[in-house]
Length: 370
Image (cartoon, rainbow, N blue to C red; front, side, top):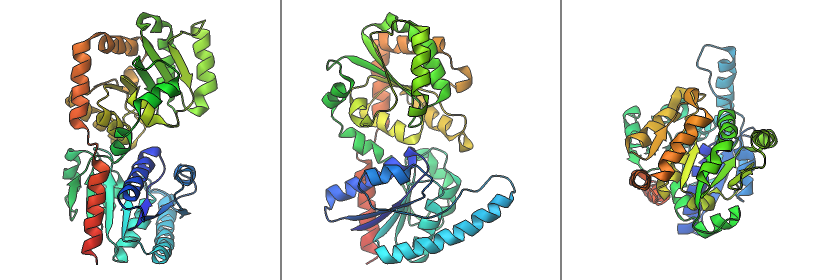
């Protein structure tokens, strides 16, 4: 099978695409992959590290108000479609997949105009503009959240698959996670993370919470600050509590996150769709702090979906502080029944075979086109 993937901007769009690629290769070792992204998004660095061939197009997103920039975006879209057509005609894919971000627009649209089967994957409960636009041209719309279906009334075929990132994480090695952290296997771990680039508000709460960690001395806390925030956050923690708590580890980034997650008891962080797929696949309870700086406030919608299933507690960023956050952590970690209920709720939403479901759909689309 020959597969083109496109998705960009953030890890939330890129990691699901990589998970699909890996599942294709696992089931069909002769699979050929091409990834089309932009040079400005994280995909330009993350995808080559995965040893996946990468090509780029130039495209920008639409602004939500009238602007001269939108005229330029239309011109770039047309140019992106033309460039995508050339790349697709050279590669000759059996199927083209878009996993979100504006780069998918010209790639998936070009594929549909060339008669190549297409699938888009929507990670969030509330879809973005690009996928809503593409849904009328693509053959299959795959959903991470069942409630997203109402937004795709014009889709030819809408399929609930979950998020393929869940499949990659479900296969993680718990023992390796403990080895990465350098702590004894079986110790309870609370991870605080603000996403791949970090989050200032969460880091501020981490600093405020640090002096209280001695009250949960049997729990190992891992603070993942994001590389740009690491030095300043660590310095502030050292100023707030000296010496540094024995049960606290401050890291800029975790490269093998799936294994570390497999060893984690509770996660505090944002509510991007890929992150939630990881948590539910592993049945990890969470305290979610949705980013208020996203389109359509989709992170809060994602978080509320887990909250309704009793898998997570939600704190809005405007209400976040270290004292409130630690009180929530302590309540969950000291209440075994509450912890187990949240774990069960998370697991009930998990879709660990998501990538397999998507690959089956790709096979169906490819076969129907021959």
